[in-house]
Image (cartoon, rainbow over all chains, first blue to last red):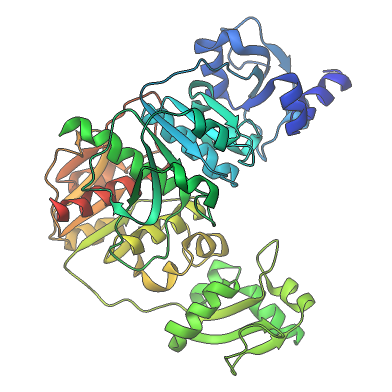
Length: 238
Length: 238
Protein backbone atom coordinates (compact mmCIF):
# COMPACT_ATOMS: atom_id res chain seq x y z
CA UNK A 1 0.00 0.00 0.00
CA UNK A 2 1.49 3.37 -0.97
CA UNK A 3 2.10 6.10 1.59
CA UNK A 4 -0.22 8.35 -0.38
CA UNK A 5 -3.06 5.87 -0.24
CA UNK A 6 -2.59 5.42 3.52
CA UNK A 7 -2.62 9.20 3.94
CA UNK A 8 -5.76 9.47 1.80
CA UNK A 9 -7.72 6.93 3.92
CA UNK A 10 -6.51 8.54 7.14
CA UNK A 11 -7.48 11.98 5.86
CA UNK A 12 -11.10 10.82 6.01
CA UNK A 13 -10.92 10.97 9.82
CA UNK A 14 -11.36 14.68 9.32
CA UNK A 15 -14.91 15.98 8.79
CA UNK A 16 -13.75 18.70 6.40
CA UNK A 17 -12.10 16.15 4.12
CA UNK A 18 -15.14 13.86 4.28
CA UNK A 19 -17.35 16.77 3.27
CA UNK A 20 -15.07 17.86 0.42
CA UNK A 21 -14.62 14.38 -1.04
CA UNK A 22 -18.14 13.07 -0.25
CA UNK A 23 -16.52 9.90 1.12
CA UNK A 24 -16.37 8.11 4.46
CA UNK A 25 -14.96 4.90 5.97
CA UNK A 26 -16.79 1.78 7.17
CA UNK A 27 -14.92 -0.97 8.99
CA UNK A 28 -15.30 -4.59 9.92
CA UNK A 29 -15.97 -7.68 7.87
CA UNK A 30 -19.73 -7.65 8.44
CA UNK A 31 -20.52 -4.12 7.32
CA UNK A 32 -18.00 -4.27 4.44
CA UNK A 33 -19.72 -7.44 3.21
CA UNK A 34 -23.04 -5.64 3.42
CA UNK A 35 -21.75 -2.76 1.31
CA UNK A 36 -20.36 -5.18 -1.27
CA UNK A 37 -23.62 -7.11 -1.48
CA UNK A 38 -26.26 -4.40 -1.16
CA UNK A 39 -24.67 -1.06 -1.98
CA UNK A 40 -21.90 -1.82 -4.53
CA UNK A 41 -22.64 1.44 -6.37
CA UNK A 42 -21.42 3.37 -3.28
CA UNK A 43 -17.99 1.72 -3.16
CA UNK A 44 -14.88 3.67 -3.90
CA UNK A 45 -12.37 1.06 -2.73
CA UNK A 46 -12.36 -1.97 -0.42
CA UNK A 47 -9.28 -3.18 1.47
CA UNK A 48 -9.17 -6.57 3.17
CA UNK A 49 -6.69 -9.06 4.58
CA UNK A 50 -5.63 -12.03 2.43
CA UNK A 51 -8.23 -14.80 2.68
CA UNK A 52 -11.15 -12.56 3.76
CA UNK A 53 -14.23 -11.85 1.59
CA UNK A 54 -12.69 -14.06 -1.10
CA UNK A 55 -15.77 -14.11 -3.31
CA UNK A 56 -15.29 -10.45 -4.22
CA UNK A 57 -12.57 -10.06 -6.89
CA UNK A 58 -12.46 -6.26 -6.74
CA UNK A 59 -10.88 -6.15 -3.27
CA UNK A 60 -7.40 -4.73 -2.75
CA UNK A 61 -5.41 -7.05 -0.52
CA UNK A 62 -3.41 -5.52 2.33
CA UNK A 63 -1.52 -6.95 5.29
CA UNK A 64 -2.29 -6.55 8.99
CA UNK A 65 0.24 -3.79 9.46
CA UNK A 66 -1.31 -1.76 6.64
CA UNK A 67 -4.81 -2.32 8.02
CA UNK A 68 -3.63 -1.11 11.42
CA UNK A 69 -2.29 2.06 9.84
CA UNK A 70 -5.56 2.99 8.12
CA UNK A 71 -8.01 1.69 10.74
CA UNK A 72 -9.89 3.83 13.28
CA UNK A 73 -10.48 0.87 15.58
CA UNK A 74 -8.40 -0.29 18.53
CA UNK A 75 -8.72 -3.80 17.16
CA UNK A 76 -8.90 -3.59 13.34
CA UNK A 77 -11.37 -6.12 11.94
CA UNK A 78 -10.25 -7.72 8.66
CA UNK A 79 -11.68 -5.24 6.15
CA UNK A 80 -12.21 -1.53 5.55
CA UNK A 81 -14.09 0.24 2.76
CA UNK A 82 -14.08 3.81 1.52
CA UNK A 83 -17.62 4.58 0.36
CA UNK A 84 -19.51 7.51 -1.09
CA UNK A 85 -22.09 9.20 1.09
CA UNK A 86 -25.54 8.01 -0.08
CA UNK A 87 -27.66 10.62 -1.90
CA UNK A 88 -30.99 11.57 -0.42
CA UNK A 89 -34.19 11.94 -2.39
CA UNK A 90 -36.81 14.25 -0.85
CA UNK A 91 -39.76 12.52 0.81
CA UNK A 92 -42.91 14.08 2.28
CA UNK A 93 -44.78 11.20 3.88
CA UNK A 94 -44.02 9.05 6.91
CA UNK A 95 -42.18 9.74 10.15
CA UNK A 96 -39.28 12.22 10.22
CA UNK A 97 -36.76 12.71 12.98
CA UNK A 98 -35.19 16.12 13.65
CA UNK A 99 -32.07 16.11 15.85
CA UNK A 100 -31.54 19.44 17.54
CA UNK A 101 -27.81 19.08 18.22
CA UNK A 102 -27.02 15.54 19.36
CA UNK A 103 -23.38 15.93 20.36
CA UNK A 104 -22.28 12.42 21.26
CA UNK A 105 -21.44 10.42 18.10
CA UNK A 106 -22.36 7.17 19.88
CA UNK A 107 -25.84 8.51 20.63
CA UNK A 108 -26.16 9.72 17.03
CA UNK A 109 -25.19 6.31 15.59
CA UNK A 110 -27.58 4.52 17.96
CA UNK A 111 -30.38 6.88 16.86
CA UNK A 112 -29.67 6.10 13.18
CA UNK A 113 -29.90 2.37 13.95
CA UNK A 114 -33.23 3.05 15.66
CA UNK A 115 -34.43 5.14 12.71
CA UNK A 116 -33.61 2.20 10.43
CA UNK A 117 -35.44 -0.29 12.70
CA UNK A 118 -38.57 1.87 12.91
CA UNK A 119 -38.54 2.89 9.24
CA UNK A 120 -38.05 6.61 9.80
CA UNK A 121 -38.06 8.28 6.37
CA UNK A 122 -35.32 10.82 7.00
CA UNK A 123 -33.21 12.19 9.85
CA UNK A 124 -32.67 15.95 9.71
CA UNK A 125 -29.74 17.11 11.85
CA UNK A 126 -28.90 20.62 13.00
CA UNK A 127 -25.56 21.86 11.66
CA UNK A 128 -24.12 21.50 15.19
CA UNK A 129 -25.05 17.80 15.48
CA UNK A 130 -22.10 15.35 15.43
CA UNK A 131 -21.05 14.17 11.95
CA UNK A 132 -22.82 10.90 11.19
CA UNK A 133 -19.98 9.89 8.86
CA UNK A 134 -17.32 10.12 11.60
CA UNK A 135 -15.82 6.82 12.81
CA UNK A 136 -17.65 6.55 16.17
CA UNK A 137 -21.08 7.33 14.72
CA UNK A 138 -20.57 4.90 11.81
CA UNK A 139 -19.56 2.18 14.29
CA UNK A 140 -22.63 2.70 16.48
CA UNK A 141 -24.99 2.96 13.49
CA UNK A 142 -23.71 -0.29 11.98
CA UNK A 143 -25.20 -0.96 8.49
CA UNK A 144 -27.92 1.64 9.12
CA UNK A 145 -25.59 4.46 8.06
CA UNK A 146 -26.07 3.22 4.47
CA UNK A 147 -29.86 2.89 4.64
CA UNK A 148 -31.09 5.93 6.54
CA UNK A 149 -31.38 9.26 4.70
CA UNK A 150 -29.53 11.85 6.80
CA UNK A 151 -29.33 15.54 6.01
CA UNK A 152 -27.77 18.50 7.84
CA UNK A 153 -29.87 21.66 7.68
CA UNK A 154 -30.51 24.94 9.35
CA UNK A 155 -33.48 23.69 11.38
CA UNK A 156 -35.35 27.00 11.38
CA UNK A 157 -35.31 27.03 7.58
CA UNK A 158 -36.35 23.40 7.52
CA UNK A 159 -39.32 23.97 9.84
CA UNK A 160 -40.45 26.98 7.82
CA UNK A 161 -40.93 24.63 4.84
CA UNK A 162 -42.50 21.79 6.83
CA UNK A 163 -46.26 21.13 6.69
CA UNK A 164 -46.45 17.99 8.89
CA UNK A 165 -47.49 18.06 12.57
CA UNK A 166 -44.46 18.46 14.86
CA UNK A 167 -44.04 16.46 18.10
CA UNK A 168 -41.42 17.47 20.64
CA UNK A 169 -40.22 15.56 23.70
CA UNK A 170 -40.39 17.91 26.71
CA UNK A 171 -40.51 17.45 30.47
CA UNK A 172 -43.92 19.13 30.74
CA UNK A 173 -45.59 17.49 27.72
CA UNK A 174 -48.59 15.20 27.46
CA UNK A 175 -48.36 11.55 28.52
CA UNK A 176 -47.10 9.85 25.35
CA UNK A 177 -48.94 6.60 26.14
CA UNK A 178 -52.33 8.32 25.94
CA UNK A 179 -51.85 10.84 23.11
CA UNK A 180 -52.95 10.17 19.56
CA UNK A 181 -49.88 10.17 17.31
CA UNK A 182 -50.06 10.85 13.55
CA UNK A 183 -48.43 8.49 11.07
CA UNK A 184 -47.09 11.35 8.95
CA UNK A 185 -45.27 13.54 11.41
CA UNK A 186 -42.04 15.11 12.59
CA UNK A 187 -40.44 14.26 15.95
CA UNK A 188 -37.82 16.63 17.43
CA UNK A 189 -35.19 15.26 19.81
CA UNK A 190 -33.27 17.87 21.80
CA UNK A 191 -29.66 18.10 22.91
CA UNK A 192 -28.39 15.64 25.56
CA UNK A 193 -28.06 18.32 28.22
CA UNK A 194 -30.08 21.32 27.07
CA UNK A 195 -33.11 19.78 25.37
CA UNK A 196 -34.82 21.53 22.46
CA UNK A 197 -33.51 25.05 21.67
CA UNK A 198 -35.70 27.98 22.63
CA UNK A 199 -36.03 29.20 19.03
CA UNK A 200 -37.48 25.90 17.81
CA UNK A 201 -40.15 25.52 20.52
CA UNK A 202 -42.66 27.55 18.49
CA UNK A 203 -42.70 24.89 15.77
CA UNK A 204 -43.91 22.18 18.17
CA UNK A 205 -47.61 21.45 17.74
CA UNK A 206 -47.72 18.58 20.30
CA UNK A 207 -45.49 18.23 23.39
CA UNK A 208 -44.88 14.70 24.60
CA UNK A 209 -43.44 13.26 27.82
CA UNK A 210 -42.44 9.74 28.79
CA UNK A 211 -44.00 9.39 32.27
CA UNK A 212 -41.52 8.84 35.10
CA UNK A 213 -42.31 6.03 37.54
CA UNK A 214 -39.16 6.25 39.67
CA UNK A 215 -36.48 8.83 40.39
CA UNK A 216 -33.96 9.17 37.54
CA UNK A 217 -33.61 12.79 36.50
CA UNK A 218 -33.68 12.11 32.78
CA UNK A 219 -33.23 9.43 30.15
CA UNK A 220 -30.32 9.08 27.75
CA UNK A 221 -31.16 10.80 24.40
CA UNK A 222 -30.99 7.66 22.28
CA UNK A 223 -33.03 5.62 24.78
CA UNK A 224 -35.73 8.32 24.88
CA UNK A 225 -35.77 8.40 21.06
CA UNK A 226 -36.26 4.62 21.01
CA UNK A 227 -39.19 4.73 23.42
CA UNK A 228 -40.92 7.53 21.51
CA UNK A 229 -40.40 5.96 18.07
CA UNK A 230 -41.74 2.69 19.45
CA UNK A 231 -44.89 4.51 20.63
CA UNK A 232 -45.42 6.09 17.19
CA UNK A 233 -45.16 2.73 15.43
CA UNK A 234 -47.15 0.77 18.05
CA UNK A 235 -50.27 2.66 17.01
CA UNK A 236 -50.36 0.56 13.84
CA UNK A 237 -51.35 -2.44 15.97
CA UNK A 238 -54.24 -0.78 17.80
CA UNK B 1 -3.32 15.30 49.83
CA UNK B 2 -0.99 12.47 50.87
CA UNK B 3 0.45 10.03 48.36
CA UNK B 4 -1.23 7.21 50.26
CA UNK B 5 -4.64 8.81 49.98
CA UNK B 6 -4.15 9.40 46.26
CA UNK B 7 -3.13 5.76 45.86
CA UNK B 8 -6.15 4.61 47.87
CA UNK B 9 -8.64 6.52 45.67
CA UNK B 10 -6.90 5.32 42.51
CA UNK B 11 -6.94 1.72 43.77
CA UNK B 12 -10.75 1.85 43.48
CA UNK B 13 -10.37 1.78 39.68
CA UNK B 14 -9.80 -1.92 40.19
CA UNK B 15 -12.86 -4.14 40.60
CA UNK B 16 -11.11 -6.46 43.05
CA UNK B 17 -10.32 -3.56 45.37
CA UNK B 18 -13.86 -2.18 45.07
CA UNK B 19 -15.23 -5.61 46.02
CA UNK B 20 -12.84 -6.02 48.96
CA UNK B 21 -13.45 -2.56 50.41
CA UNK B 22 -17.14 -2.27 49.47
CA UNK B 23 -16.41 1.23 48.15
CA UNK B 24 -16.62 3.00 44.80
CA UNK B 25 -16.08 6.47 43.33
CA UNK B 26 -18.65 8.97 42.03
CA UNK B 27 -17.53 12.13 40.25
CA UNK B 28 -18.86 15.51 39.27
CA UNK B 29 -20.43 18.29 41.26
CA UNK B 30 -24.02 17.24 40.53
CA UNK B 31 -23.85 13.63 41.66
CA UNK B 32 -21.60 14.46 44.63
CA UNK B 33 -24.17 17.03 45.76
CA UNK B 34 -26.86 14.39 45.43
CA UNK B 35 -24.92 11.96 47.63
CA UNK B 36 -24.36 14.67 50.23
CA UNK B 37 -28.04 15.62 50.28
CA UNK B 38 -29.81 12.29 49.89
CA UNK B 39 -27.39 9.52 50.81
CA UNK B 40 -25.04 11.01 53.47
CA UNK B 41 -24.93 7.65 55.29
CA UNK B 42 -23.10 6.14 52.29
CA UNK B 43 -20.26 8.66 52.29
CA UNK B 44 -16.76 7.64 53.18
CA UNK B 45 -15.02 10.85 52.08
CA UNK B 46 -15.75 13.79 49.75
CA UNK B 47 -13.04 15.80 47.98
CA UNK B 48 -13.80 19.09 46.25
CA UNK B 49 -12.04 22.16 44.92
CA UNK B 50 -11.91 25.30 47.07
CA UNK B 51 -15.19 27.24 46.73
CA UNK B 52 -17.32 24.30 45.55
CA UNK B 53 -20.17 22.77 47.58
CA UNK B 54 -19.43 25.31 50.31
CA UNK B 55 -22.51 24.49 52.39
CA UNK B 56 -21.04 21.11 53.36
CA UNK B 57 -18.44 21.48 56.13
CA UNK B 58 -17.28 17.85 56.01
CA UNK B 59 -15.59 18.21 52.62
CA UNK B 60 -11.83 17.80 52.25
CA UNK B 61 -10.47 20.58 50.09
CA UNK B 62 -8.01 19.66 47.33
CA UNK B 63 -6.47 21.58 44.43
CA UNK B 64 -6.95 21.01 40.70
CA UNK B 65 -3.74 19.04 40.36
CA UNK B 66 -4.78 16.65 43.12
CA UNK B 67 -8.24 16.23 41.61
CA UNK B 68 -6.64 15.41 38.26
CA UNK B 69 -4.54 12.71 39.92
CA UNK B 70 -7.48 10.92 41.53
CA UNK B 71 -10.09 11.50 38.79
CA UNK B 72 -11.20 8.93 36.22
CA UNK B 73 -12.51 11.63 33.86
CA UNK B 74 -10.69 13.30 30.99
CA UNK B 75 -12.04 16.59 32.30
CA UNK B 76 -12.31 16.34 36.11
CA UNK B 77 -15.42 18.07 37.40
CA UNK B 78 -14.91 19.93 40.72
CA UNK B 79 -15.72 17.12 43.17
CA UNK B 80 -15.23 13.41 43.80
CA UNK B 81 -16.66 11.19 46.52
CA UNK B 82 -15.71 7.76 47.78
CA UNK B 83 -18.95 6.05 48.81
CA UNK B 84 -20.03 2.70 50.20
CA UNK B 85 -21.97 0.37 47.94
CA UNK B 86 -25.65 0.54 48.94
CA UNK B 87 -27.03 -2.57 50.64
CA UNK B 88 -29.91 -4.37 49.05
CA UNK B 89 -32.96 -5.66 50.87
CA UNK B 90 -34.77 -8.58 49.23
CA UNK B 91 -38.02 -7.70 47.44
CA UNK B 92 -40.57 -10.05 45.87
CA UNK B 93 -43.10 -7.76 44.17
CA UNK B 94 -42.82 -5.48 41.16
CA UNK B 95 -40.72 -5.59 38.02
CA UNK B 96 -37.24 -7.19 38.11
CA UNK B 97 -34.56 -6.95 35.46
CA UNK B 98 -32.09 -9.79 34.89
CA UNK B 99 -29.00 -8.93 32.84
CA UNK B 100 -27.49 -11.99 31.21
CA UNK B 101 -23.98 -10.62 30.67
CA UNK B 102 -24.14 -7.01 29.55
CA UNK B 103 -20.49 -6.38 28.71
CA UNK B 104 -20.36 -2.70 27.84
CA UNK B 105 -20.24 -0.57 31.01
CA UNK B 106 -21.93 2.32 29.16
CA UNK B 107 -24.88 0.08 28.28
CA UNK B 108 -25.02 -1.17 31.87
CA UNK B 109 -25.08 2.36 33.31
CA UNK B 110 -27.75 3.45 30.83
CA UNK B 111 -29.85 0.42 31.83
CA UNK B 112 -29.55 1.34 35.54
CA UNK B 113 -30.73 4.87 34.72
CA UNK B 114 -33.69 3.31 32.87
CA UNK B 115 -34.40 0.95 35.77
CA UNK B 116 -34.51 3.99 38.07
CA UNK B 117 -36.85 5.91 35.70
CA UNK B 118 -39.25 2.99 35.36
CA UNK B 119 -39.12 1.98 39.04
CA UNK B 120 -37.61 -1.46 38.54
CA UNK B 121 -37.32 -3.08 41.98
CA UNK B 122 -33.95 -4.79 41.49
CA UNK B 123 -31.43 -5.52 38.75
CA UNK B 124 -29.88 -8.98 38.93
CA UNK B 125 -26.66 -9.29 36.92
CA UNK B 126 -24.84 -12.44 35.86
CA UNK B 127 -21.35 -12.72 37.36
CA UNK B 128 -19.90 -11.98 33.87
CA UNK B 129 -21.80 -8.66 33.54
CA UNK B 130 -19.63 -5.52 33.68
CA UNK B 131 -19.12 -4.11 37.19
CA UNK B 132 -21.75 -1.43 37.86
CA UNK B 133 -19.37 0.31 40.30
CA UNK B 134 -16.65 0.82 37.67
CA UNK B 135 -16.05 4.41 36.52
CA UNK B 136 -17.74 4.19 33.07
CA UNK B 137 -20.88 2.50 34.38
CA UNK B 138 -21.19 4.96 37.28
CA UNK B 139 -20.84 7.87 34.83
CA UNK B 140 -23.57 6.53 32.51
CA UNK B 141 -25.90 5.64 35.41
CA UNK B 142 -25.63 9.10 36.96
CA UNK B 143 -27.37 9.31 40.35
CA UNK B 144 -29.25 6.08 39.63
CA UNK B 145 -26.30 4.00 40.81
CA UNK B 146 -27.26 5.05 44.36
CA UNK B 147 -30.98 4.35 44.01
CA UNK B 148 -31.25 1.07 42.09
CA UNK B 149 -30.70 -2.22 43.95
CA UNK B 150 -28.13 -4.20 41.96
CA UNK B 151 -26.96 -7.70 42.79
CA UNK B 152 -24.56 -10.11 41.06
CA UNK B 153 -25.72 -13.73 41.14
CA UNK B 154 -25.37 -17.06 39.45
CA UNK B 155 -28.47 -16.65 37.29
CA UNK B 156 -29.38 -20.35 37.22
CA UNK B 157 -29.48 -20.39 41.03
CA UNK B 158 -31.50 -17.17 41.02
CA UNK B 159 -34.09 -18.52 38.58
CA UNK B 160 -34.45 -21.74 40.55
CA UNK B 161 -35.67 -19.62 43.50
CA UNK B 162 -37.87 -17.30 41.41
CA UNK B 163 -41.66 -17.69 41.36
CA UNK B 164 -42.62 -14.72 39.15
CA UNK B 165 -43.44 -15.04 35.41
CA UNK B 166 -40.31 -14.58 33.27
CA UNK B 167 -40.31 -12.53 30.05
CA UNK B 168 -37.40 -12.77 27.62
CA UNK B 169 -36.63 -10.60 24.59
CA UNK B 170 -36.00 -12.90 21.61
CA UNK B 171 -36.07 -12.46 17.84
CA UNK B 172 -38.87 -15.02 17.42
CA UNK B 173 -41.05 -13.91 20.35
CA UNK B 174 -44.59 -12.52 20.46
CA UNK B 175 -45.29 -8.93 19.37
CA UNK B 176 -44.70 -6.97 22.57
CA UNK B 177 -47.32 -4.34 21.68
CA UNK B 178 -50.11 -6.93 21.74
CA UNK B 179 -49.11 -9.25 24.61
CA UNK B 180 -50.50 -8.91 28.10
CA UNK B 181 -47.68 -8.09 30.50
CA UNK B 182 -47.83 -8.79 34.24
CA UNK B 183 -47.03 -6.10 36.80
CA UNK B 184 -45.04 -8.49 39.00
CA UNK B 185 -42.58 -10.08 36.64
CA UNK B 186 -38.98 -10.71 35.62
CA UNK B 187 -37.54 -9.44 32.33
CA UNK B 188 -34.30 -11.00 31.00
CA UNK B 189 -32.05 -8.96 28.72
CA UNK B 190 -29.41 -10.94 26.84
CA UNK B 191 -25.82 -10.17 25.91
CA UNK B 192 -25.16 -7.45 23.28
CA UNK B 193 -23.98 -9.93 20.65
CA UNK B 194 -25.16 -13.37 21.72
CA UNK B 195 -28.57 -12.71 23.29
CA UNK B 196 -29.86 -14.88 26.16
CA UNK B 197 -27.68 -17.92 27.02
CA UNK B 198 -28.93 -21.33 25.99
CA UNK B 199 -29.08 -22.61 29.58
CA UNK B 200 -31.44 -19.82 30.70
CA UNK B 201 -33.97 -20.17 27.86
CA UNK B 202 -35.91 -22.82 29.79
CA UNK B 203 -36.80 -20.29 32.49
CA UNK B 204 -38.61 -18.00 30.03
CA UNK B 205 -42.37 -18.31 30.28
CA UNK B 206 -43.16 -15.57 27.69
CA UNK B 207 -40.97 -14.61 24.70
CA UNK B 208 -41.28 -11.03 23.49
CA UNK B 209 -40.15 -9.24 20.32
CA UNK B 210 -40.10 -5.58 19.38
CA UNK B 211 -41.52 -5.63 15.82
CA UNK B 212 -39.17 -4.40 13.11
CA UNK B 213 -40.59 -1.90 10.62
CA UNK B 214 -37.41 -1.24 8.63
CA UNK B 215 -34.09 -2.98 8.04
CA UNK B 216 -31.68 -2.64 11.01
CA UNK B 217 -30.41 -6.04 12.08
CA UNK B 218 -30.83 -5.43 15.79
CA UNK B 219 -31.26 -2.75 18.43
CA UNK B 220 -28.67 -1.64 20.98
CA UNK B 221 -29.17 -3.54 24.28
CA UNK B 222 -29.96 -0.48 26.40
CA UNK B 223 -32.36 0.94 23.79
CA UNK B 224 -34.22 -2.39 23.58
CA UNK B 225 -34.41 -2.50 27.40
CA UNK B 226 -35.91 1.01 27.39
CA UNK B 227 -38.59 0.12 24.85
CA UNK B 228 -39.58 -3.06 26.70
CA UNK B 229 -39.66 -1.43 30.16
CA UNK B 230 -41.78 1.36 28.69
CA UNK B 231 -44.25 -1.25 27.38
CA UNK B 232 -44.49 -2.93 30.79
CA UNK B 233 -45.22 0.36 32.52
CA UNK B 234 -47.55 1.71 29.82
CA UNK B 235 -50.09 -0.97 30.71
CA UNK B 236 -50.88 1.00 33.87
CA UNK B 237 -52.57 3.61 31.67
CA UNK B 238 -54.82 1.26 29.71
